[in-house]
Amino acid sequence: MDNVLTFKRGRIPLLISMPHPGTELTGAVAQGLVAGAEELSDTDWHIPRLYAFAEALGASTLAASYSRYVIDLNRPADDTPLYNTATTGLYPDTLFDGRPLYKAGMTPSAQERARYLEQIWMPYHQTLASELQRLKAEFGYALLWDAHSICSAVPRLFDGKLPDFNLGTFNGASCDPSLATELTRTCAQHPAYSHVLNGRFKGGYITRHYGAPEQAIHAVQLELAQSTYMDEVAPFTYREPLAQNTQRVLQALLETLLQWGEKRYG
Image 1 (spheres, rainbow, N blue to C red):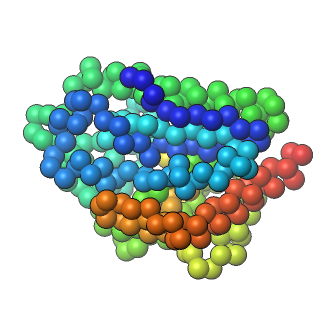
Image 2: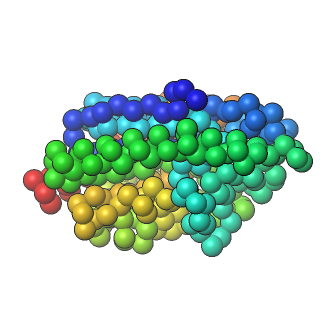
């Protein structure tokens, strides 16, 4: 499989990981999806566009091309569950709302899925790990921002409406606590948006696996409510004026991240 990711190397100690904006499907997955799943509703829609400003900041960016319906890059290779509550695995078999993802008997074979692990999951994580090590070697530390979004109301996954900005640090294990404090303070400076730290979304595999503050690698996940920048129903239209306001907050958060790093290690 070609073109499984898009990677742009930056000039500052920040990598923005985007594991779920992809919409490419393999033949086996496309043929097996139930009616309606072709909308790819569980995609982190438009995330590379939303974070396009980060290139001017100098950040490295990494974005997946294939849909999470093929393989979920934010799950461990051995598919160990990350949450005790309802979730989806390395090879999702249900939609976020709980409906089966595949027609009966049309799930991709184990051999097919092993190919996805080797040709989609591995290159993404090899690139991510390599870039973090480059950043640390060059700057003495590395900052990882794992960028996600989700529909603001998914009853199977959480009650009510999700806060707008959901910061996750794996309950403080993936970054220095003072960094989380600074990020929540920045969110509070934008009262038009709600926020929470380590609520329903505490950080998936990427945040948990790569965040190592004792080794000067600090990882934060942001799960952003899609209502802050797009229409949450098909065709999932990007709403430019709405998104611009949200981008201002995102930029403020990334600048806070960078300022914290300079103060701590500069």
